[in-house]
Image: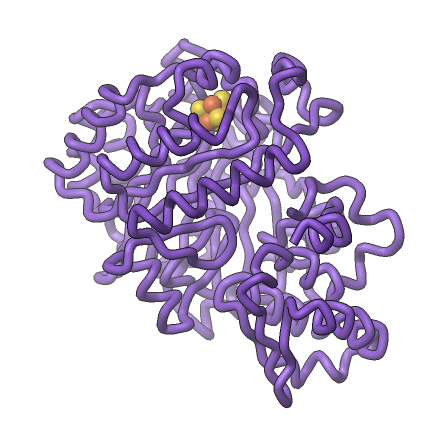
Length: 443
Ligand code: SF4
């Protein structure tokens, strides 16, 4: 295994989109975007909605998200108005639009007090599909029962808690202190309020983490019994993410030490009754995510893995990404500029965008299928321009027993799961020679 890791570990995209965002061509104007949505709604009339709340009360030093650190609760007033104006733009064009799901992400969505959550969610009330699914990312340090009651009253049943690590030394080293009893209280509150699915986000590769601290964390996680877990690798990129310079590099586990944290952590998760689904995610067998994975019906969006996905995703708020099957579009990233632009009913400035060519669509479908269900029909891939180059690349992975090709189907093997990003990179014509250097390590 170590030889394979040495051979394949290199920077590469995580493929939440294909092409990866740095390769988007910025070729979509406002009128075209509206047309892309119109066509997408003809295929499937209900949309997924993402709402980005960019405020956090305290900075976590490892954070790579787009957020503003503030304790000033008033900051959210004008932002809520901006979100309302952005939504009005879509309603103006698509008055009968239906919403199949809402995902609140951040930042910290629970930065908004209960009254503001209520005010914001009310604007969507007349557009909710009967099979609606609501999910929210929660910072356990910033949530109360009133917020959960409001969310539940609008049909929210899925919560994701940022945990990272329960070890106090690690929490101090990343400036995110949250005790086990605090998290235990939040889990209890979620269950009492009627939330049906709870995910914990954990990170390995943080400063001061050891195999013992990972095992202790997973034992505590197991006591709290979330049905889902994400176990992400920490990507230390201080040259691009300034706040990561606050992390003492001397305490960072790297190379084999970091890999061991993942391997031991994964073994502990299996022992605790979790199954691996897709990439970096684990689920109990009774969870909706495991069932979707088991039935080869897992999907992936910018928000992570899910059991259902519409053809249209509309992202509201600064930095939010929207997509249809044929296009991607990211909103203005700067929160101040976003709020200023949205003082009237309008579409915020398009920071980056991309119209998918027909070969982009083929590659995107195959990459998403591999990332979700570890298999893909590659019939159409044989028709793309670079097929002979791709075939050569895949045969190298086949020799290393990381994948298997049977007729038109490509299957990822059990050890191949670790190298999923590398396998997808072979299909990616945008990477070129230096294109991958801007990304985090693949393994
Ligand atoms: S709470 Fe989340 S988004 Fe906010 S600073 Fe911490 S890691 Fe970043």
